[in-house]
Image (tube, rainbow, N blue to C red; front, side):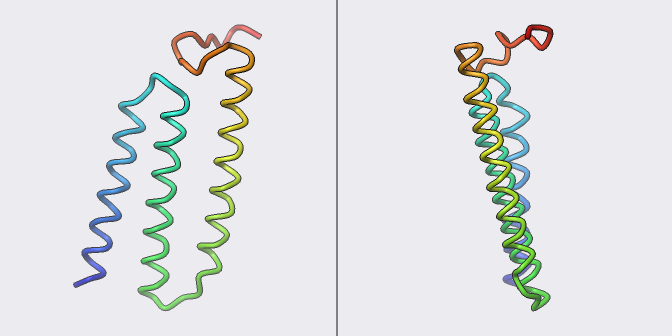
Amino acid sequence: MLTILNWFLSSVLFIMGVFTFVSNRKHLLSMLLSLEYIVLSLFLLLFIYLNMLNFEFFFSMMFLTFSVCEGALGLSILVSMIRTHGNDYFQSFNILQC
């Protein structure tokens, strides 16, 4: 019963993260934060799944390592965008500009 509750709560966390990602499109920073929230909820789902099947947690550490790399890449894109354009609004960012 407890595992079903854990699955439900982590699925709700994932759906909330996706809803936040879809609804906040104004700033790049808010989109990156919602993506990190989604990754953490997926990590929680993975951890519950591996714990339920009595597997080792090596894959969850690999997932966490790749999610940290993804966060660092997102922050570097944010810093680059702020240095070139002065803000992180998507409305002022034009893809055709170099």
